[in-house]
Length: 257
Ligand code: CO8
Image (cartoon, rainbow, N blue to C red; front, side, top):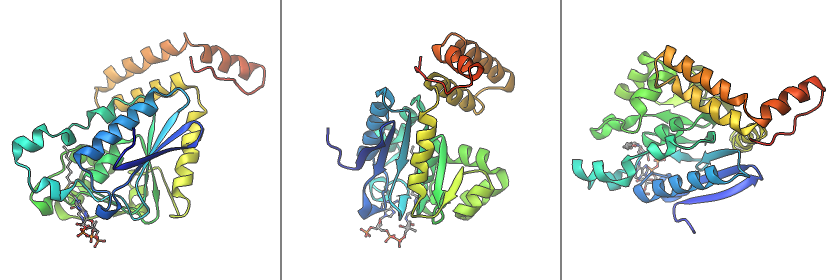
């Protein structure tokens, strides 16, 4: 099905790429665009050839936030019932998602990057949550995810004082994984995606899931969750192959089962 607001490709046979594509609005996020993003994330998640997904925008803007022109018309009930507001479909994607961020990642754009599992940034990336200047606040996870990533003091300043973080600051405070020149950040994100896609995929899924549990469960519950996932991997062909390959001093051939 052709999309209107995103572009998709497979730059490597095992990496799926989604590009936000509303350049006239700096990739401002609206309901139809988010539905396309969810649909394509789910399509890549269901595709056995794909091991990792990269979500990107343009060099100028990952996304400059939710579409203010659309939100300007909305009342409380409209915003509550709009497709736009339920981002939980992103949280149900089993494969790792890497955000490749250049330029503006503001408001919902910063939140969308933080829904992803890792962030690779260009040197020009700028992260911020300027919702307060519109009389609102972050609504897609910003108050929680930014705080957990960079700490309370800085998160307060970003959200209350409209302070954007440069790529270097985002790296320093642990919001992003890596920073590259604008010419290479997307290629580097795809290369990281290929590296992950080359790992045994059952373990990849269970590790992603267990790391995310660090945000949702108590430590003892999360440690139990990890242990049970660890036991499950002992029933996989990849566990047998990985250990046999180590003993035989050869590269493993993953079956992803
Ligand atoms: N929404 C709609 N249109 C936008 C947006 C946006 N967020 N950002 C930029 N645009 C449009 C501009 O209106 C302009 O269009 P036009 O040419 O038709 O006037 C075009 O993009 C280019 O923008 P600028 O001319 O402003 O470009 P500049 O380079 O001068 O400035 C900025 C770039 C600084 C990024 C500036 O555009 C800006 O401040 N944008 C708004 C940033 C913002 O406030 N973002 C937060 C929005 S609120 C939000 O994201 C809440 C998320 C809640 C999710 C909740 C789900 C439950």
